[in-house]
Length: 330
Image 1 (tube, rainbow, N blue to C red):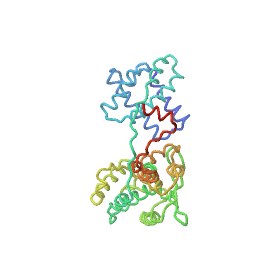
Image 2 (image 1 turned 180 degrees about the horizontal axis):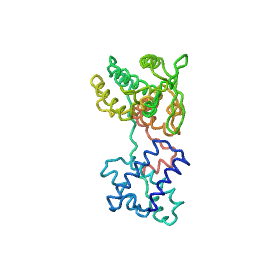
Image 3 (image 1 turned 135 degrees about the vertical axis):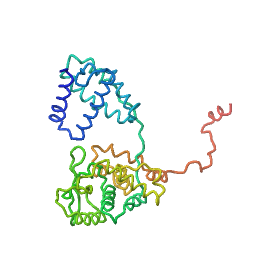
Image 4 (image 1 turned 90 degrees about the vertical axis):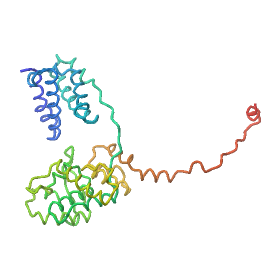
């Protein structure tokens, strides 16, 4: 057996599981990265993945792999950087356990991240959000489920993984209705619910009439919705809503758009960014700053406070001193 296979296995069991207690999503993303890398290395070197050595994964091969992600798989620079981060984590782990390969490891760790464009976040206006929520056919069970999912996504700003992981016992209905969720980074959050959301939830939970551990949003077979399924239903209802709200036609609406919409609604309501970061479960307040850059209405209000430029007649120059006047006339 080569040095790479046991080292990579220990990376997952020792570092990701034992030291970091990484989430299933993180481990799945890392495993996918290395699966792609090993298959790329096999195609390039002709060596089976189990026979590859750590020395085979040199800077040239890893750099070629990162470029392959963009050129052939069509990944964005952000995805490329995410894959690079997973590789760096492994090579950093390997640097303490394979000192004979330190030169190769150092060269791989020196591969820089690729600069990316910072695009403005996409969000829905109040009218667009109402059109999207009204799009599902509520005469059907699936339509009522979808309407609640869209409504809850916009009101709470939950990530799609947080939405589909909700169970019936995640909801607390009463004088102070709220929901509890376990979010990114294993952060527990409690989010208060508005009255319209409470009414929809009450009707939906009554209709389900199942065990408290059952998923809040399930398929017709009773299994939890997947991320892909939510993406498809959001796209489908967005297309329907666009028929009556043409401004939706030019927007790429994804499940994460619902989260952005919630953030922008909070910002327009005058909520400070620290509170918005707490509501959304952001690790740092810097993450929330993207909404300030995207808020055109806030920029317009700022512009209204500035004095108007260009309406005053130009001031006539007057010399302040006789000597200056003399020099000005030369």
